[in-house]
Length: 304
Image 1 (cartoon, helix red, strand yellow):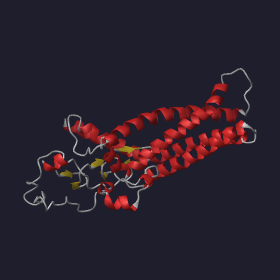
Image 2 (tube, rainbow, N blue to C red):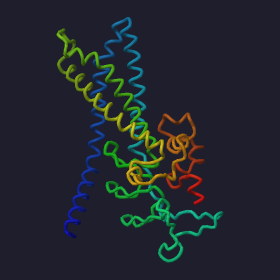
Image 3 (cartoon, rainbow, N blue to C red):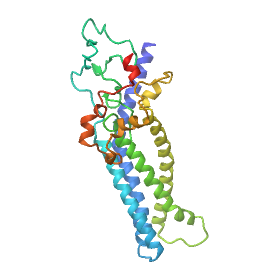
Image 4 (spheres, rainbow, N blue to C red):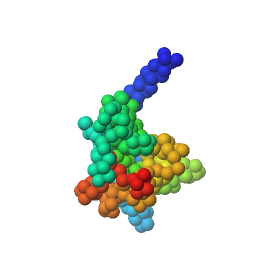
């Protein structure tokens, strides 16, 4: 049994190593899909339609403006997720002492003897990183470190999704869904023409690219919609993918503050920043949850 467990651990390690190498390829894949889509929508279909005159020119202008606007927001959100650290545990981190309640530091004494008995509030220790874990923190085997409020490791962004980039990830899903839906709708007439008896304008290469772009964007729109719905439900309950799995049998969740406050825990309180991958300085200063180390909980849980 011991040898079997060791073999399983080794296989998991190799799998995590493979995911690290896969990351760069996934970025190139994302950029490749965007390139194919840009060629099919902009260069092949709607830029030539600008010179057709009449209603076709107006429709082409609207499609091109929407397409480029959503593309900018999609790329901004995407690279914000890729290049933003999801949140690391500060060196020598210790939980804060609540002096008003007179609670002692649970780390003082014989080997955590004063650790709270509440499972959702106990002080946890990561044996792989050899450090304490703040609330809602989990170890990522792919990144090889603990991540604050870890949701999951995403190979599409070559990064973990955690406290500091979760909003950017949600915006990436949101703008990806809008962009792929727009592309699917704008290329639908061209896709239908493939099955008509009439002559189709364009070279074989441009026709193949248009067909491929429609199929890819339709597939991405449907799949991203499912992920978007799932994460909307997670945000509304102020939980993560990992926490939703862990608390299947927990009737109450201490961090569920109501939908409005749960939303603000991820997107901030400043409405001007809700749809861009950034936070206002005031929100960062006033909301500790955006730093990933402290999270407000329900008053009834605090009193307990």
